[in-house]
Image (cartoon, rainbow, N blue to C red; front, side, top):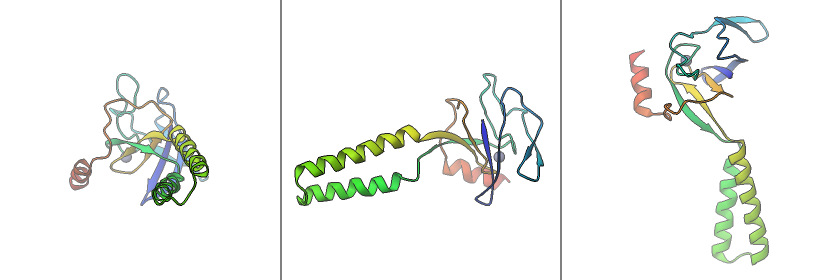
Length: 148
Ligand SMILES: [Zn+2]
C-alpha cells in the first residue's frame, strides 16, 4: 500500500509498505529519516489495515475524485440552464451533454477509496479496504480530538 504522511495539512513524505512484511521501521524522504511503524492491532486477522501504522490512531474511509469534478458540475449546470432557456439547438446540446457524460464516467473510473487517520491525517491508498471502515464522522472526529 501507499502511505502519505502529512503534517499541518501538508504532505511531508510518502512510502510504500507491504502489509505482509510489516517492517518495524522505514526510511522516508531524501534525508532518509526513519519512522517507526505500529503493527500491533493495526492489521486485522484477514490482513486488512485496521488502524494508522504511523500513530496507532483510528482511520476512516474517504472517496477521492480528480480535480476536474468541479468543472464538470459547472458544465452540467450551464448545460441544463442553456437547455431550459432554449439557447441552443438540439444537436450541439446533445453533443455537449455527451461530452459531460464521458467526463463523468472518466471521473468514476479514476476515483478511488482511501483510508485517512483521524489523528495524524496520514493517508493510505493502493490497498484492499475492509468493509467495516466508516466514512468521516464529525462526532467521532471531535471525540478523538478531545481525548488527546
Ligand atoms: Zn495516525
